[in-house]
Image 1: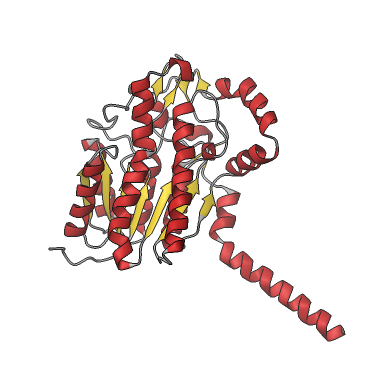
Image 2: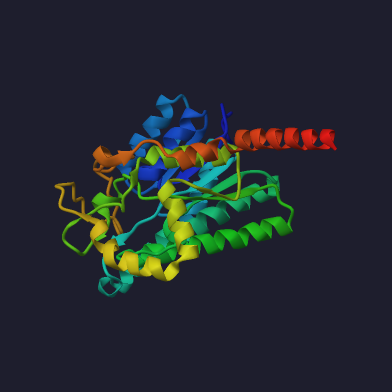
Length: 334
């Protein structure tokens, strides 16, 4: 039997590190009780401590999102121990830095199983519970690379393209049913997360996000905003905007540009941690890695595009007032 909840209930997959951890912290700060799904025990305990420090109830759940039944069991436990799920965030993923022809098929499958099918499993588990109640919000975490692929990350780019296609299809099905369940996407730029300390790396130099680099708290704010003000799609980072628009306007030019600069832009000679690949084992089982990666000195904590998006309603209201006033003035003159 569910305990009485103090606030709304959120589930975050991949909630122990990076974007997922930032989302856990932001949602907890807004009064949510949070279930955290991940594999690393140290990361799970630390993420749960973040929720409790914010005054919420935490439920750390050891689960591999590639395992459909594990995700469904986690959803059942959440509703039993915390209450009905209001928000489900699919943030878990894994990746590699390698040329496609140097990536083994077991590695291809694992990245697809976690990064794409993990979001399918999470979305369907959430819908199984939200659709009968006709309420709830699901946020699928995408990337600028869901629109414009780059070198050295073919499996990850393919998985993010698949997430976008899957999400848009389910959106149409919910529209057909006139469901009040909201399914959203957030598209992210290069972020300073532990991902780059534990990506599968077959190139020798340390991986890094393509600049400009942003802090993961920006993604956490965007996810929490969508949870409370759901809409179809949201972009974070000016670089996300020009990447997506550039892919639409000049795809061949983008091919040539990325072919010339994309390999070098994803590597650094900095002496940063190397934790080994987390494809088949968690990178935060013995030690919590938190939300941030090793690039704090060059990561932006603010983003004009996000600030505009968060204030979209106010901006639209001002625009409507101005246009309405102009229309009144024109009619008065007539």
